[in-house]
Length: 100
Image (tube, rainbow, N blue to C red; front, side, top):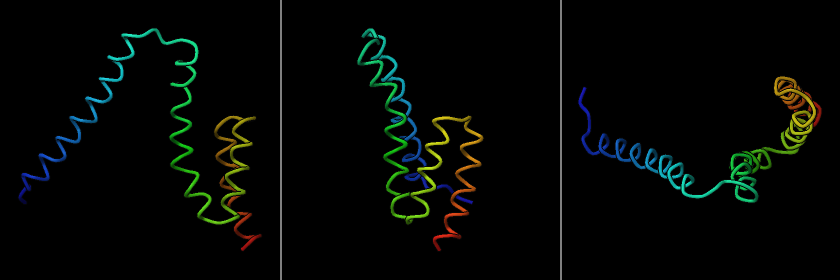
């Protein structure tokens, strides 16, 4: 088996850039006090990213999947994550069967 040098260098470069952005973010945050609106904004980033990734796929999949996602979100707001997961899977199965 042979390794393509360009592919290996590309993978290593992407890893270095990813690592640099993570470390750079932490280094930059040490320069500023994180409180108030900045803290709230940084805490909202993971939810915003997940929503941006998941929402288009859910809405493109059909009505049953969109309703099941809504059920899952509502369950996650009230119950532990395992309950939301099981309820989401159950609701997508039932809604796909019921709505076709």
